Length: 388
Ligand code: DCT
Ligand code: MG
Image (cartoon, rainbow, N blue to C red):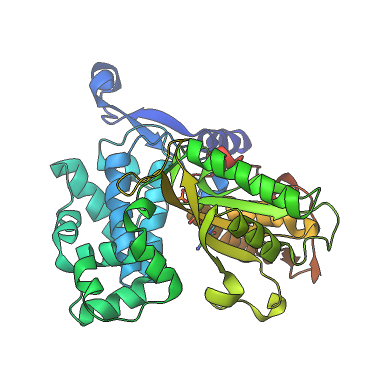
């Protein structure tokens, strides 16, 4: 019995195996009836998810429904669709039949219905009708403005504003971020390339070198996970000597502005969403819009030689750096799942600042991401496999 047990565990541990769908006649039918069965861990942070997605027809459908739920402030539904999409991204081959999904975690009734629709009809009727709906289209357009969230977009829609033209003529008061979001709408909705991210990285490195020697810059977000494009570029800044990083963000921003490389910066404690009270006095995060010059040509009235790119800068003390790198590398779902795993499975609280062990009632120190995974009892997953 012991041997049978361990064999079963071994089979479940390999990522997939095949089984004849016609158990009664395995020999004759095997080639056409052979279908991959999958065994997948239930938390995204236990899985390796590369950018190599074998089920984009399914993940696109589920992601669109997740996005629609989030745009309608239905967070529970949003997460359920995100989890289902993440599970499909982690499968090693293309799903062709519903029977392959039996026993898999993260797939609720609604997600299964969507998947079935796509497998049988090529598209999901719910996705198609969502895409066509006036409300979804308006929410997409309006939240595509930097500084506009789902709540603001919803308020505008209730006042009859469905597009940028109507917004411009509505007399709505826009805050500073929204004004520049509207001004740079097309630029900011064009994906940022890796080459652009690298060019911006050089500017940021130059900025931190100029204001405080020895400062370090790390690329985080989607580009650290190996993505070739992104909606912004994310950087984390620190200094090897604890405490030296205090006051660094306003200096970096002032340098960038003096060089005319940024159009606008929004220090979070001044312009952004509410901050936790514990570090109120620190400019920890800065959303900014960079003015990225395209070439060495001369600008004329009709020929614009730069484009606006969103850049997120975060400063972290070196003692928290490993937690900050882990927290800002993403993906969003991977981060959410790490925190859920920590809380539900380990009785720990994980943030971008620290890991607290509620059982031992103490903070756990770490200087690398590997150490944090080890504290959490998780196998180390490199950034390129955190694309859940
Ligand atoms: N993050 C998070 N939870 C959020 C927002 C962000 O955990 N609600 C973390 C994970 C990713 C990182 O911050 C950067 O955020 P984004 O730039 O929004 O994500 P991205 O993966 O870099 O996506 P993109 O490539 O589109 O910029
Ligand atoms: Mg990003």
